[in-house]
Length: 277
Image (tube, rainbow, N blue to C red; front, side, top):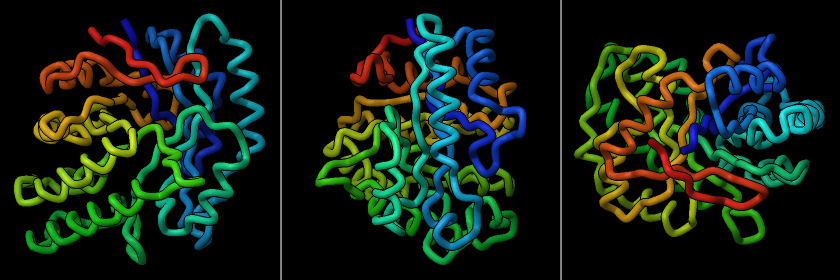
């Protein structure tokens, strides 16, 4: 059986904890019994181009992760990855970022709409319902655009991360989301990632933070399954060693409830499906 956390961050991410080193994440991964760990530090393309975030130090991260891979070889399947944010907004910059090193696991993610701050900074508590749904509809449109991003005619993404990222902050604002009005767009998005062989990430950070939801929810996992989706990954989105593996087991239970009994990981450079318990 497999126990994967394929979305994690170190101090090389602009928002990673100072003590979150690749070595510290690996030690914690072994403590909690992980079989597979992907270190996927942020390269938020728009944030870097527009001067909003520190530029990802890809060379230093590569050296540190390679040292950890060698140190923990045979004990932990450690993947050298990256979370490439908003690649569609500055595609040439994104392609150059991906060309720096041989990434084994690439997460494509959307954190903000064009000319709109990260959803993290938006207060949804008193926002009118039509505006909430308008923003979510726009987020789906841009996620479609992001998932169509290519490098030499092919998708570089192993998985699309927290596909309902905005929902996290809707929940922080003590609001609920009725996704049914967005089923058509969600189904179209699912059909695109299926066609492009991109896995759907089940991000459980919202469970670990006590928000009572996952990204996507069980409802939307079932919709993905109904659309023919088969490839899923699991990630804690940990930004410190203490959060490695948190709520992944609960995520497995949700996947099983949605009809999935395997998760995608990468072994020896090849994408493989592994049974979950």
